[in-house]
Length: 113
Length: 112
Image 1: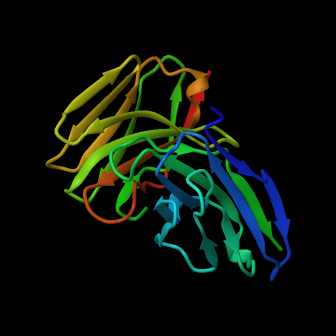
Image 2: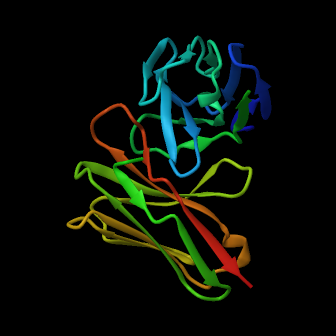
């Protein structure tokens, strides 16, 4: 198993550009989520999904879209990048929502200039 | 991470014990977790404790849970330089849509 994979590892965008961060897992996990990590703020939940076709907002969803067309993939789209979106983004998956280990990807470091 | 609080930094000498503390506010928390993040890497689950337990020991790691005070601690015995990392406390709740609520992380620095 590859676990949770994320691409790209690093990305630099100009303000106003759009892009998609990719996340995939090969563990047949139902639950997938996206977090952003900023210094001194821990990890904040952006969006999550409890299964294919089902997504919902986390605590900081503005400026991001997600979709879950398959169990394996959960891409995160930045619609119009802003400097405030400069962060490290982590994708995570677990078997179900509650009570199961969350497996994290290696992260994508995004800089918006 | 405002519902889960941790101190930001801890420095210890190699061979000493480290104790990282965490407080949380939601009494409905079911599981409490400790994750480790090494530089440039994702988060790795170290250990977890179910809310009806007081203590869990796993090799060099001891987790203590005081449910009355909503206080969780992670003790690392015989701390090594390889233990230098950021340690995140996280809670899982019975209700709501978040799988995990994280603290802001404690940076552990181990001096040789």
